[in-house]
Image (tube, rainbow, N blue to C red; front, top):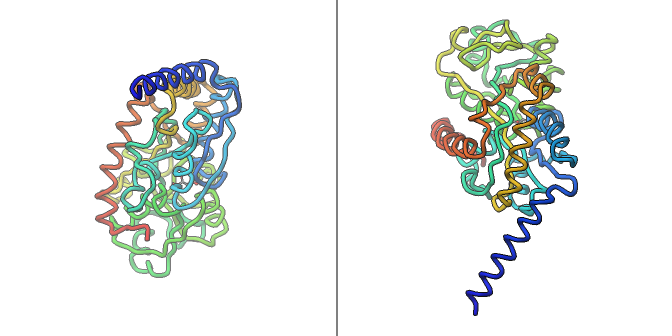
Length: 324
Ligand code: MLT
């Protein structure tokens, strides 16, 4: 009797899912952005969801849920109703570095999500306040090495992109600046521009406009090639720093049990947004990297998350980084 009941329940569930997915979405969708408004994750989320909303015919409403390097917001999103009406913007920090830094993390990036797709690649730039007493990477590194006890580095919380790429940077050049946590690198950038915090390693989409506006200093970009939007910023290699090449990425996820038809609708809408000329231009103008078609699938994102967790865990453990 029990078997028949379970079978009937499963069929009913599938039927409901099918019906639910058929009409999906019938009301606005919430996208949780796990950092403060105005930072790189928030900016990318607002750019790609603008066109996604048009494709889906329902508004995607951004909800900023900051804290604990993005893990607070992602935990909430992971535990939300898996009906397609709560999705999230995660990234290399929340879905790559976090497991190495939070022993009691309440989610497994490789198991607890339905990947939707990659939104944008984000090269990392080493930036400093305008008053920083150095005018190139060589001078910056020299100053850091002799004054690291007097220098403070901004980041968006343990496990964030700015924190994990900052820890990696500090371990490569063997310095230990004071780490100053913010609820996002949007607020951190405000303090950098106010000359109240010294430097950070941040995603290009956040800092490019302020570098172009000469409001902060950029010493190098941590990619093999220069960025077309920052042609005068040398790569770390060109500037004489070996062993520090790192890029981040931002991607859309849904809770694990989200129905496959709903996942496909969200994935299709994201892919369409990345084919939209205006969306692409807005991301490219900020130095973002548009994923190729092969990189945009849910399967590709799953593989990326698995490889990033595997990559960042030893790097951060070697750097002696912990959340507590
Ligand atoms: C980070 O990981 O540093 C975040 O992306 C910063 C932010 O989006 O505010």
